[in-house]
Length: 428
Image (cartoon, rainbow, N blue to C red):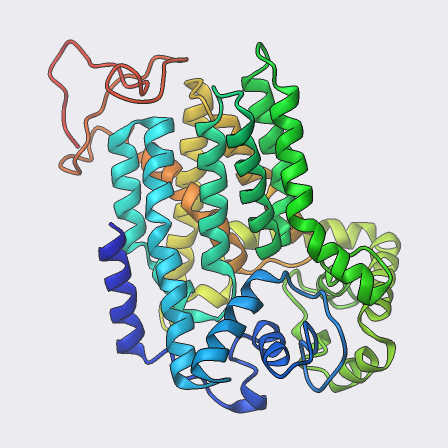
């Protein structure tokens, strides 16, 4: 799976010449803020200057991916074609490696055949090919880390040993330092794990996981405290909130309000400094929200719809309805699979529910973009395959339709919850 997926992505990379980044606006399309920070690091200015000019320290994004780009810049040059090729190839590798936790998680939850087909689905899933090559960002790496974190949680559900739980916390720390939005899911995942060990001694393992997470993110928070005088994990919530909630907002992102595309805002950002600017944008956003609660509710509802049905960003030119229909279909299948898993008391169903229900909440109140949803699309693919597994008419796809008895185990024909029927099975 991994080799095939990587080959497919590299072939598309070569065929589309995605590594040829236009030099417009001083190569801002080369990773945006991520690329700017990486350049500043290589030029000896530290973790700073995410937009235009030297604007001082920043916490606009997590540290992991800019440091990765900086390492590539160090070896292959700043904003070179070779660096672009290497970074996009790494994105492709992260996406290809995601096949492993998808297959393993599907196996643990729904049986080996569902996991196997879900993994192969990811190999050729259009968005799993599109996003690694579309934008130099942490999207594919974050998808991989979240899938690995959930697989680790499911694997630890019967283990009270301290060391694996410590590794679990460190893995979550790496995920949070890559994309801070994932922090929202850590308490829920930890609570689910503790519930699984409710008859065991879960206090010490949970404390070890929390301590490992705290230790893992502390150097980044301490760095920000040293440069800003305030403990900050990520600074740009105010701006994101403002870009989704302002007079004339549509529910989508107001790019015209971003300092990267608005000279007046850029000057204000440079003059005020990052944290003061973000604080002001947050105050303006909350003032709009509290003054127009009805409008905010309508905008949030629109964002819910956009998150699950897509926007123009994922539309193939000339295929508007087809693109949005496919995007919506994946959402529908994922929720059908989730409902089926909950009704059949599949172990881990509520963990998957937390991912689908809680992860999008920040985007419901700020602004949705299809690449944000990509972080949970590995889990959506697993649930979609599980939903399709209930359709007997889909013959010839390689796994049998069997009855699931609630509360059965994970692995094997008698352990994965797929009990053999007495009658011959019809194979999909």
